[in-house]
Length: 291
Image (tube, rainbow, N blue to C red; front, top):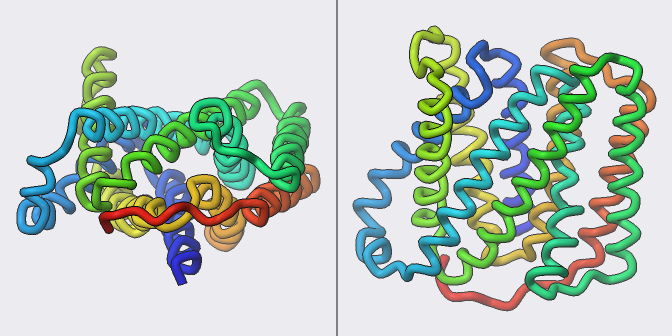
């Protein structure tokens, strides 16, 4: 049942690409709105039920939440920018190579072993990403830049997931999510202020898309997966996100009539197969304390 809930969370995430396509604001501004609204929507629950836990947080827990939030800010900025430059299918597939980085960094930093089947999945994930890049190679520098930004988004997402996995061992999903979204908001705000970018004046459509992403993609997407990090391995949570490009591509086809190219489609299938192999190779995590 927990895996089914994680899949439903990924379905929420898949709406993100659609909302971004409807928006007109720069990627960092859209991410700023999304994170700010998500934190505000969580604030009443935090104040009513989690005040004591918030006061009892250790320095290590706060640092992990802050680090996770900073990575999430980079992830959203890179991912949103990539959607403007490349196809929805390519962007969502490449950003979900996160499992590749989670497995490698988990081994290098946390000493988490990867089984042979998992390494095969990682190799397939890398090969599929190369196929997508080759499919886009003749389409112009902006598309290749979009692919590169999607991969940067995947690397940042792996930092968000790994730190979240450590933090969720002792911190509840609500407190973790609020601190992460608030940190991401502050990081984006500082970045935009340093650039001198305007924060307002982008029209109602961007308010609508940001609210939609905050509600459906963040609270019913990222927050659901943050909850799942306590009960499922971090690498499984990353792997199950491989379904996001499937959902997003179907939505892109239905709403925008966007048909993926043959090589992009083939590369996407290889990536999805690779991350599913990674998923099959993963064991169950140790039981933790808080929900």
